[in-house]
Image (spheres, rainbow, N blue to C red):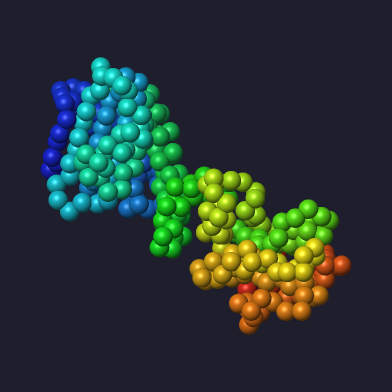
Length: 311
C-alpha cells in the first residue's frame, strides 16, 4: 500500500498522522500474514499493492477506503480529520465520496475503532488482528464471486452474492431445483426424493423460494442459478396437463452457462416441450415417485463423475 513515493492530501497532521500511518502499516502486515488461513494469495489483498486510499477520522470510528485497483503511477493517500465536524459520515457515504470526488474505481471500505490510535501496542494489535480476519473473509468471498464469471448484464448480482454465499458457501455442491411448486403430497415427495438422494453425493438442493435475497422474483431465481453449479429440472403433469414454461426458461438459463442439469420427465407425459427435444432425460413415475426418482438421480450423479460420500 505504501511505496517509495506518495501524493499526500488532507488535513491530518503531526503525531496523529504518524500514528495513523503506523496503524495502516500494521493492518497491511497482519492482513498479509492472515491470508494463507483463508487460502488467498497476498496479491488478492489490495493492502499488499500500490493503491490509492482515503482515511476519514470520525468521533468514534476511522473509515478506510482502499481502491482495489493497482495503479501505475504515484499513489494518492488522503487523510481527513472530521472528529470535530458534523454530520458524522457513515462508511457508505465515504465509499461513495471516494468514487465521486477522487475517482476510485473499485472502492473497498472498512471501519476501525478510534482506539487503534491508542499507544497501547498490545490492544492495537488485538483490534487489528480481528479486523484482518474480517477482511480476509471479504477477500476470499470476492475471489469466489470473481470465479463465478457473472454473465454480461448480470454484474449487479455481485451485491447480493455475499449474503447468498454466507448461507450457501460451497457453490460447487449447490444444485438448483427447477419444478412446479404447488401443494400436494406428490410434489412434496418429488422434492424429498431428489434432495435425499443428492445429499448422498454431497450436493445441496436449493429452491428459489427458500429465501428472498433480492426483492424481485426473477432476480431471486437468477441469483440461485448463478450460485449453483448444477441443476435439476422436473417436468410433470400431476395437476395440470400443460408443461410449466418457467422450468424451461430456468433450464435454458442454466444451459446457457454450461451447467450440467438432470432432466426428470414424468413417464406419462407424451413428450417434452419442443425447445427441449434432443436433451437427454430420465423418466420417473408420479405414482411410484421415490422408487423411480432415486435410481434416476443416482445414475445421473455417477454419469457426471460424482461419488457417494463415505460414512
